[in-house]
Image (cartoon, rainbow, N blue to C red; front, side):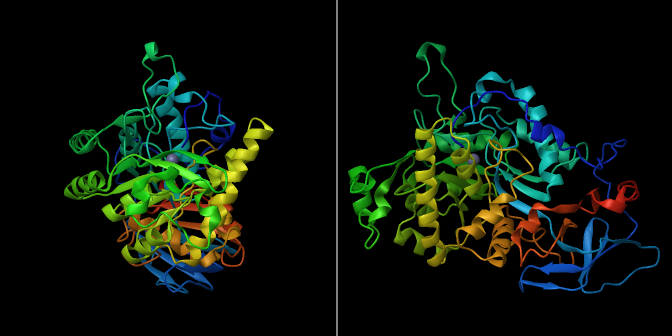
Length: 473
Ligand SMILES: [Zn+2]
């Protein structure tokens, strides 16, 4: 999210090995079972009605869900897998990840400079496996940060069944302006250090860059719409005195003097973003933006982006528009908490904690205003496979467990444009099913205890199922 990092072998990633990796002899995707599987457990979470039923059963055939509920047909010859005292749920969705980043506390260090794209690609495959084993069966990768379109190779290898990993929406590199967020500012100019995004400085360049990324395999567009971000003293001028804020009617935030303690710089105008969204739509996809605050958020929401990521500061008018247009915010608390907990000095810790406190304060306003939410962790700078912490933080900071789960499954699927195939245990949907210990509506930390993982009808993790992965071919 923030910059570049230093190489550290990520024990957390390397230690998480798949319990069952799919066999790969035929290099094909046709690994789904012809044999029906019935999953049985003490409970099942129904996403849309928002309730737990007991017991729970899911009938899987040909990689898809054929039925789900308290009981399902048991066809002759079906393999019944009893998962005991667990809750069946759809596979989790992470709407904001970076497979190509690994931890290098206190920030992201210099990994994008130090490590080659091939090296980072190998690490990305380990990250994909770790995320899947943690129950994340669908993810949106928000940028390789310097590894070009290498994410297309990882996505394609997963889809071909060559390596374990979630279904992926990928962006290739993010897009940013010269001298903007994620550009390599502050290095010896003679060294020509490259930024972590593809440059686009105007509408024409935005469209050209989107087309080039599409050519290389990107399946959505990630744009840096704001940055750098900073906390400023109380009483500072709104938007650093930017007249555009006044034009937009977000120059004053009545009743909330803390609102303008955070400042960020916008990167693209509303018209430029509209052109980017139109080009993405021409390609039958959408645009996600890194955007921490105003007026950048207003421009993005006016333009019709799919989500506003980080979304630390949203004015009343922008919140109302997000609700009306059903554009989710993706708060990404886990990364902020991680940086606050791993700051290199007391002064840095104070800065990170001030930002987190502000973010929590504004999040409560956003929840109260009815801003749609989705769940995205920004995992990468913290260990892959640990990002279910995001669910707990969103509950801790003001949402109910049910609201967070529905935000994840419903809005997450919609952001990924897969609302017709993932995020529900429903007839015809892809058989992406997990089982967790405990009841997630009573204790949201249940999603950190994923003990069974099935994706597309193939079992990747889970007690009695070691042989089922083979059977599922
Ligand atoms: Zn990110």
